[in-house]
Image 1 (cartoon, one colour):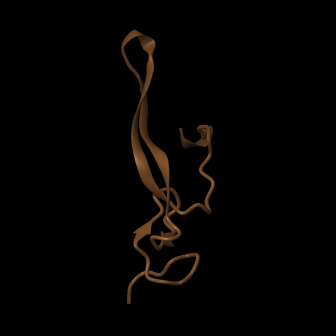
Image 2: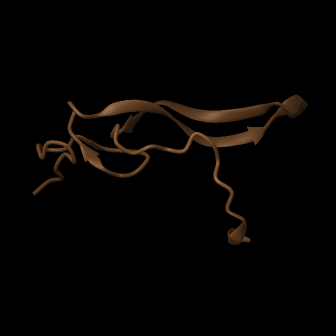
Length: 72
């Protein structure tokens, strides 16, 4: 038995890159995914981005990084 779409229960075609929910082709959306951000030459911020990562359309990835001081 395969994974089912979070929205409609039909067979899933992909999983959301941001939250992991499974979605069918009709309910899949796309959103850019930032894999890494770093400081390049001349102190210019640069990013490695996947342009059309699968997104469920339900979850809300944060637009800004979240501070996590307790990790250290």
